Length: 127
Image 1 (cartoon, rainbow, N blue to C red):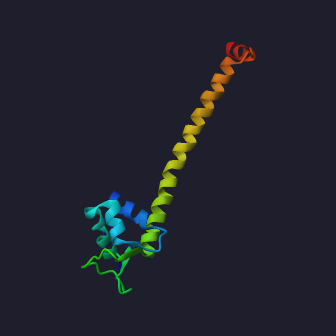
Image 2: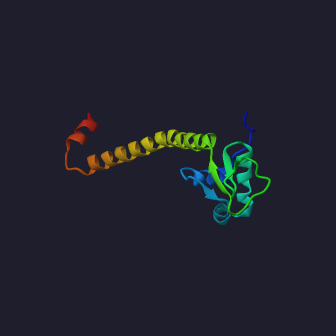
Image 3: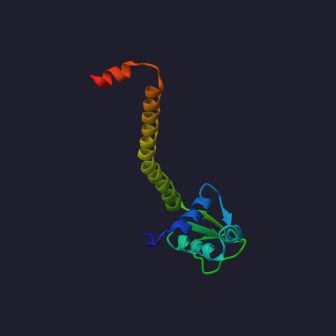
């Protein structure tokens, strides 16, 4: 059973960075996100979202010692979390985009109908 961990915005950014890569070295994560954020990788390992490959090629979720040459990669639950979160963002954003496009089309239609020399619009409005 996986340990429950809280995945905040910074942890998710690290997961997105690791997603799709075979492995990322700890020194690259520290360089990109800073020392404090890089320590979150150990939490991902504790929650079984990621694994550490030691310089001797041993794969472990134990992060009691973090080496600059250690490589980290997401495990299946980590990949699934990133994919699920991306899918949820698409589901949330799609109705907003449809509404914005609808408003733009309606306003464009109104402007075209008002600026056209067609007098039928005014006749229909008066009736």
